[in-house]
Image 1 (cartoon, rainbow, N blue to C red):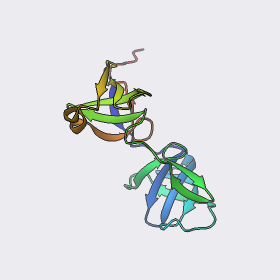
Image 2 (cartoon, one colour):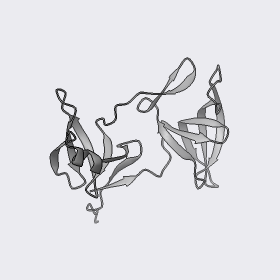
Image 3 (cartoon, one colour):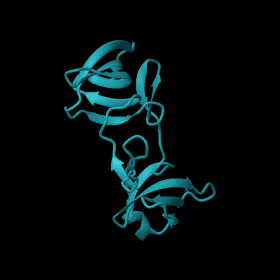
Image 4 (cartoon, rainbow, N blue to C red):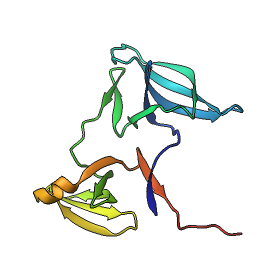
Length: 159
């Protein structure tokens, strides 16, 4: 199995666009390659007092900035899009350590320096972030299910 960056458009994703933030509520494919959405929109400075729902069309080949996922990284509060506070490292974070990608599967409750990680080939280990040499080698690169997912490159279906 291999961790890959999510490139497709999914319900729940939040994008930053030139006119504001778009939360994908539903999608449907059209004949000309454009996706149709019902979106939740806030203006760029997030001062909109109401959130309106509207139809929107987006070119799936255009590069919009994915900033999060509803109820994982952001939530709607008082009709505004707000970021959910996160610790530096949390379960489901994707980290790069010693040139390999890992998912954080558990964090020790008594000592948050100890994190349990799983590699792309499903090997599990414990990493102590209390050692400064380990801490300096860890780079957070995303969140599982938000920015990255598994692509099973070993499973072949034969008929």
